[in-house]
Image 1: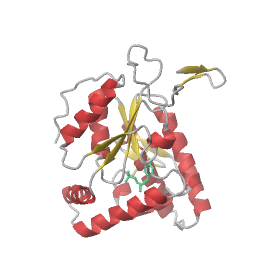
Image 2: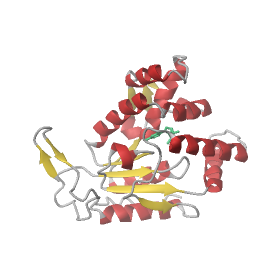
Image 3: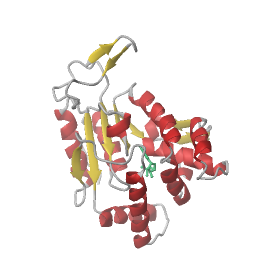
Length: 261
Ligand code: DC
């Protein structure tokens, strides 16, 4: 870590460009960041939330920002091919993440927590996230939040672009069948019936778009720990990430362990 006098802040990087492995909790000069990336429905949100609980960190849902920006574009009837306007739609959006996205997500002062989960918003957010100006606007906000608190940030480019010096980077994967089953169960719990094969196709399409876009494609950072959640219980995946975080210097608050299934 080095003090950067020009910007009046501590730079989080280290000469090796790798995460710090020595315990940081004794110094606590900077806040800690755990980056959790991976494809759609790989278990990021559940894992990130529970890990944040265990460590007493703030959970930040970066996908909710892309979703809110997409909802704004839909409401303003902006064509999803008009990339220039999409950038402005995102820049001008007032997006609020109450408690990092765990509470209400607001757009221009309105609660859109439910609205951003609609299938057309899901599809539009994936298209919108290919636009560099949209990404620039949202990444700037993600950094502002992450630089001020110990946080667990989930997304697609957190370990590669948003916080390349994150203390711990996790790349979550799961088989397509498992991911489709999870998404199906999640929708059913919200009272929405959906076809399992159609869900699998939609997830594959999003994976393709997220990983082939030119700006910040979804990919595992070289120093990210790969965690395959296929066949793992939620408690097991949370325990795994928490142990890795503790090894990197995080201090667990231990509020009852990862007992949620
Ligand atoms: O994680 P999610 O399904 O809520 O994300 C919605 C879309 O936003 C997803 O298709 C990819 C995009 N996204 C992104 O490009 N970068 C992020 N850091 C988070 C989400």
